[in-house]
Every structure is written in structure tokens, then in C-alpha cells.
Length: 284
Image (cartoon, rainbow, N blue to C red; front, side):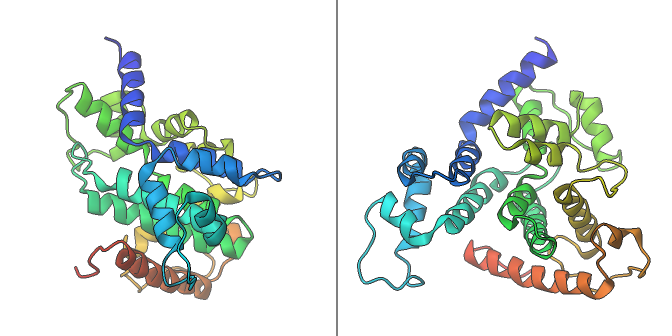
């Protein structure tokens, strides 16, 4: 069997294991339609029982303070609003896709979730500052390394029996092992799930060598976020940043060092809050 056939089978297997991202992509398309019909969104979301239950549960929480309870998906969506629906979808991705070990990489589910969630939070904060859609930014952040799930699945599914040695550069190991890296795999997977072209392109080009003025703001935001997290750690615990005022790292958005420090501080608080919300220990 050829690698191409193996890859297609791995894609099908991913579809079976992780239906939520495909639902999310379709939901985003529906919610951006100016002639939005809530009934169309209901029809889609009800195909995922866990999503239906979560949205209704949130709508009946004390936060909204209603005396009567929502008993169906349509009334729950109307109560919580579309922003909350997107947040629940992102949270559902965290629970499903990001909760499995990437054993071929030697990466635990906690490590994978932590880096993805931290990137998503920082992306959201950056987007708010530069006038981009924070929901789109969060989604790109949470999915930026999803290609590694596909590569891990491919290796396991077809018994390659290989593991990253933590010495060879990780992308070089990916290409040597399966013929492509995680950015390519991620873009293919998201295209299959019908995510917007901008999202797929941002995932594909996230490791391009240089960010220029022609680079899309969302791509620049992802490159900025991943580089900053490399300095602060996935939990934003390293606060002693060494960033010169004239660093090209600050150039795309004309940020200064104080802006970056504020981003890190705010992202840290949001990260702790997210872990608490998902029942994940904040202790090291």
C-alpha cells in the first residue's frame, strides 16, 4: 500500500474519531451568514450529542440568571448567543482531540493541550489589540498543531513503529518519517473539514521564514504567539522576558515591551481560568 493510500485512510480514521471540528467549521460558516437561520445551526449541532448537552447545560447556568430552564437546543442558543456557542465548540475540541497522548512524539495529552490552549488564548488577546476577529484567532490557535494528531494517527494506524528521538529537529523527523510536516498535514485536515481558506493557509504557513508587511495579520499573530510562548513557557510562567525595544519580534504590530508584558500577564490569568473551568489542576 502506498503512503498516499495510507494517508487517505488515516484521514478517514480521524473523521471517525473526531467529529467536532467538522461540525465547528460548518457552524462558523452558518454563523457568518448575514441571513442566519437559527434552525440551520440547530440542525447541525444536534448531530453531536455532547455539544447539544453542553450548550443546554451552559444556558441553564447561574451566570444567565433565568428562572426557567432551557430544555431544547434552539432556546439555549438564543439565550447564550453565538459567541458562547463558538467558545463551547472550542472547549469541546480541547476535550476530544487534545486529550490524547501523541505517543510517537513522546508528548503527553497535557503537554499538547497546554501548548494549544496557551497559543489560542494569546492569539485571542493579540487579535483584540490589532482589530482581528478574536474567535477566529482562538480557533486557529487551538488547532495550529493539529497536524501532529494526524501524523501520530498515521504512524500508529499502519504500524510504522517509529518514535521521535527528541534530538532530530521535529519537523525534519516528520518529513523523514511520513513525507510531510505537521503544518501541511494540519492544512489538509482542516480543508477536509471545510474550514475557511484563511484558516487553512495560516496553519500551512505558520513556520514560514519571515513575517513581512504583506503577511496576513492572522498569520503574523500566530507566528508572534508561538515565538512568545517559546519564551514564556506553555503556562506563561516565565515572566523575565528579554526583548530589546528594537527587536523585529515586535515589528509586525508595532508592539512595545510593555504591551508584550501585559499580553503575557492577561494570558496567564485566562489560562489559569480555563484550566479551572475544565477541571485541570493548576498545580505543577
